[in-house]
Amino acid sequence: MRVPEELCGSPEAQLVITFECKDVGKFTAAKSLAKLLREKPSLRALEHIAANLIEKHQDEAAALRTYEQALKLYPGETWVMGRMADLLLTASQKGLRDPKRALSLARQVARADKEWGWGSDILALALHENGELAEAVRYAKRAVELCRENPDPDFVKRAADYAKELEELEKRKKEGQAQP
Image (cartoon, rainbow, N blue to C red; front, side, top):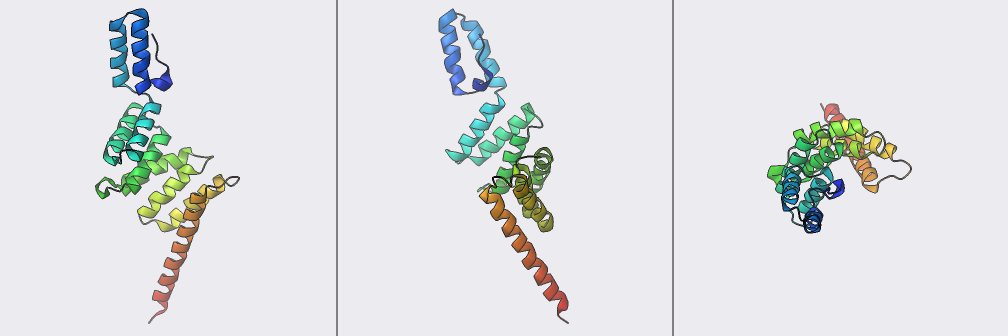
């Protein structure tokens, strides 16, 4: 009796277990499989659960716990680190926000993302939230460059916004230095 990996930890897995149980009449094996699925859900299932908690239930705390679980079970998964960093930066519940931790996660994601720009964009956001504007501009521009054939409009806007913010900051600094 084998539940396909993409179903592990999902509600569909219970259907497979029930079917298998009826089909072969081995309740004990089905029960053991169900226990195993509860102990280590697939990465895909955890991703789905976290997204569902955010989108449909607005339960960011539970989604954060789900990302934590995913990182414990699947260390080094950059997609999970990126989603978790994003949540730590943008959570509507201010108590969940942790820009320093998000920055650490985002740096790992950006190092791994050499093709899509998503990691650089998350890092740009984390750097901005941590007050590192010049570096945020650099990574926001890198995100746009990495996906130059099909640039994400959000990446382009963020790069332009951060560049403008840096320009205004530098202008204010110069004006402050010029005054006697």
